Image 1 (cartoon, rainbow over the protein chains, first blue to last red):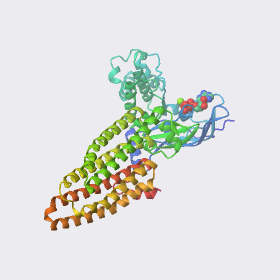
Image 2 (cartoon, rainbow over the protein chains, first blue to last red; image 1 turned 90 degrees about the vertical axis):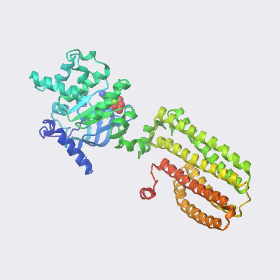
Image 3 (tube, rainbow over the protein chains, first blue to last red; image 1 turned 180 degrees about the horizontal axis):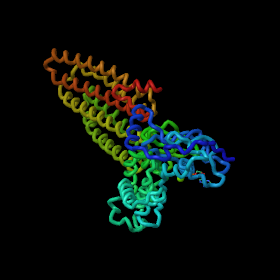
Image 4 (tube, each protein chain N blue to C red; image 1 turned 135 degrees about the vertical axis):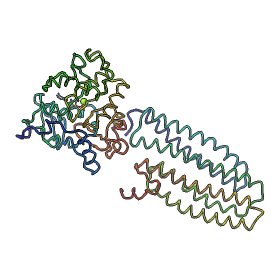
Length: 288
Length: 228
Ligand SMILES: Nc1ncnc2c1ncn2[C@@H]1O[C@H](COP(=O)(O)OP(=O)(O)O)[C@@H](O)[C@H]1O
Ligand SMILES: [Mg+2]
């Protein structure tokens, strides 16, 4: 049985047009000052299952805009599942589905059948553990999403590609070799290329699933720096197995254990004085 | 619950043992120094001075252990506070042992003169300072927050006793011009004991921080009570 909330609302506005990100950042920090940070994603009473058993149970979590939220927890606790629910990547798995609850993005429910999933995925980009550039040129990797969405003017395409590569801190390294194959780049560069490809289509939220797991320490540091830098324009949710990475890049941390959210809060608090014993044990590397 | 890494667990235990060893050494140095003064035993004074070197070395070794734990295991939450508290407590114990050394040096000088009749008045003050230090160390050992907080309260009494005694010694000195030097030594010893009390308060505060993550330094003890 797959219970999906029936939704007849048209595609939410927020899933189409792009707003002025500086204004959005200002609004976010203003509301943070007032104690009510604007929520980019609101997950409520959320249950999800691939088969019978729930992979996520009773998850309620707010993800504030223009902040980096880290999802941590042992393998198999449902971190990737939750990320994929946020941009509906689990839709295609037969039998899998939302069993209960809701996910709102910028205040709009995204679980309904009528939601424009293509628009949703433009609004919410995703970066994976295994960097996966297309076997085409560096330029084409970034231009791809723009072409799909109808941009064909050469000048405009070139500008957009440059802008995205600059934003991903990759322009200086690639500007003289844009038409070389993307697979000739180093691992770290390929991952940053994937980030450039993601931001080319102007998302507001970027989901990252262990983006540095396959990278060496220097490439990892560059990606972490990029994440910190992107925070002013994007809401970022990152799954990481590396506790130190969570403390370095994230503002908030959510700890999951066998499908449940155990505790979430300011990262500094989660790693210095967590409320729950399970959290303390996990972040301290203890077992029962 | 134990750490997955035995070596991490062992390193934390070792660090704690070093702090406790340093605590008993500082207590002992203080005791020997005072005994050296009151019993006019220069050998005891000399050994309090010599033992201070060992305390200094132990402090450096605790800093080293703490640094290695941070580097190797990147402790968080309670573990992080344990390491920070151990290093700061070691710093305070080192200062306490320094006070013991100063006391012993003054005792050694006084032992060359006639005994000052008022010298024994430092004993009750020493008892008070020692109790405070013992309480602070016990609070650290047992994670006893209430006991740790009580050290700060007791210290107000020690401060008052110290002021009273300094006042008394100052007026006694005015009447006995022969013994001015020794009265000055005694006044400095009283100051040392008062500082031992202050360091014990710091140790209690670190014990509270380690156990509860509350920072009660600089009069923030009310915050702790609010949240309890
Ligand atoms: N495609 C799938 N089909 C069936 N079960 C899955 C699938 N993907 C993940 N799971 C199961 O869901 C649970 C959560 O997995 P996942 O979200 O990948 O965890 P994490 O990312 O925290 O390691 C696990 O028990 C996993 O075996
Ligand atoms: Mg995963």
